[in-house]
Length: 206
Image (cartoon, rainbow, N blue to C red; front, side, top):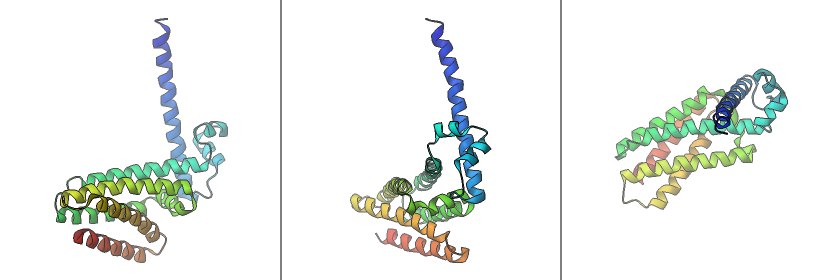
């Protein structure tokens, strides 16, 4: 009995590691296919073939194409949340807030422009309820971070008001980015600048 336990433990760990590595390979292959032809054209069989696994094995990890896309979307959201949290963590005054949030808008827009997979996924958000739910949850998380930064700047402000307006700002920001990448670059740049001025004016006057 005492010998079996450690042996089983050793055997399970490589299996878990291989599973994690296989998931990463699947997601990497899916990203490559989306970047090449778009998510609409991506087929589960293509992902399995590129990943070097059977279609049955693929379905063990992801039951359908939507599950792969949602996983990729959530990963991009985590990166965005980390970026926003880090960008706002040192905000103490109004000028800190103006500078930090303005820079975050630019950084977030650059992320959308630089990541074709991210663009593809979020361009289809409104047609996929699961992606819409992920999008809303992301805006709530980022809105709470923004509200906390604004509360540090103005401790006397109504916290419920800050929470509501910050949630709205983040959700409108996502919508602005999707709109900006769906039009010509010059117009998209201008739309992002308009959003930035509008939001910063709201926050500075609030």
